[in-house]
Every structure is written in C-alpha cells, then in structure tokens.
Length: 61
Image: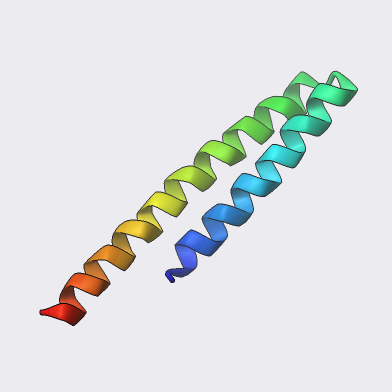
C-alpha cells in the first residue's frame, strides 16, 4: 500500500472531524477547512491507488 493512500485516508478523517466540529460550533471557517482537507485526502488517496495499480502491473509484467 502506497504511503499516499495512508496519508490521504488520514486527511479525510481529519477533515471530517474538522467539518463536524465546525458545524457543531457554528464556525464556518473550520467547517470549510474540514471540507477542503477531505477533498485533498480523497485526491491523495486516489493518487496512491494509481501508484499501487502501476506497481502491481509492473510486478506482473
């Protein structure tokens, strides 16, 4: 598993927590930061998935 997938998943969790905290406290800035962290984590996770797929394809070749 690529480190980008691990870091991306962690960012998604962090973002979800920040977003929820922002909603609970009424802090729009914190909520939007959480949404941004979640989106960044999804992208990083996808990049890690592509790296894993390429690595698997090269290993099978």
